[in-house]
Image 1 (spheres, helix red, strand yellow):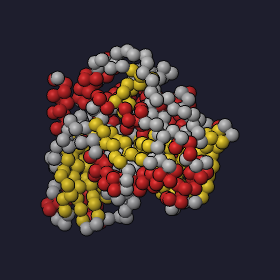
Image 2: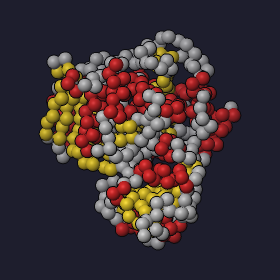
Image 3: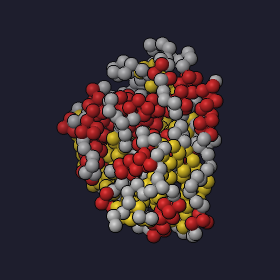
Image 4: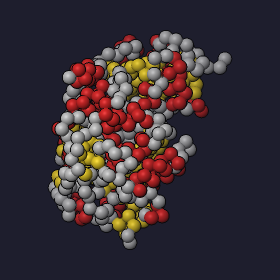
Length: 343
Length: 162
């Protein structure tokens, strides 16, 4: 799956040039700076969900989640392309804060997608997340999942929860794509780097600061080490230098899920990524399925613009352009086969 | 090693201090739900990973979080203590809904929606929220916000017009 190559010492300088308040990053980077190698990003097969050479993007409008998922998967052509890759899948959700959907991925959504994967032949599904550390008693790796009830609901529903320490150097591998304009590796979680099937379950949100917007790309901040996340927030928190918009694409590049299933039954408009700060929850009653995460974000950004007059497509133009340039997908929806159905 | 020790100290700073947030019993009919929490600039990212920049850039000092219950309703109060009043005022200004502002308490304007009330006083920016983001307007939420705002020191960031 992964290919070890291009062995070289980790460049610590970038990690260690941090502000005084970033002790987490500094300490972790210090520990990680010894004897680690950089690998190539994971190699994934081409997007199997295509029609006449264009990536498929299926939008399902409805009220019944199960019916919407089944209709969406059928329109996608079924999940056989996934089961050819393996029998175990890892879900990526968005668990940025201990606040309910649509700030975070809803447990009923995870279970519903898991049921469809099981029906398709995937024998085991697990949810991965990394939002805490055992170094702090108050923020263990599972604290948000536990507070939200996600841990119990998924475990009871037969989906394993993999809550991992965001500062444990043994858990991460350093990867780099030579096409990145920033010649620095990213520490992606080993489980995601090695997983044969990754299914991403984004939510659609506004985002303060440099990201502006969260859907399929930005959510992979949660796939990489806290040191990487903090570095971007520190150096370009307001997004003015362009580092934020580039790096969030690189984080997504380290994971490259085979399938994205967006829960847009509701979206978080006007502010985000949490409920504070004037955010508004708007019911949209859609789910979106695609193997192309750039197309997903392009569509979801339009969805946000329809419902939030403070959001402009220009805000995400540079991240979409950069993602498309790196081959992560299609930003121009004219190059995408968009299928809109009701269920 | 020194960095690792500092890290441990920083992470321990995510403690169970309520700061200026009163207990539910002090407020009357409210129950305390879980332990109060306190976050520093080193740990704020663990509470709102990805959303902390707004506060840090305006001179964040500490965040106190406390959860309250009333019947089936669950409320959360986030009290952001900034280094000075201008930081609190700026965060409020960038987060408020100007069309939803009303006087809440002590002559202070607040941004009031069905599930969230924001206000600022002195060096504090306060958000009180119904934990159900689709809940209807709640008198208890308004009363809770009013009580918290009344207990804070300092001038209103945005006084109501006389």
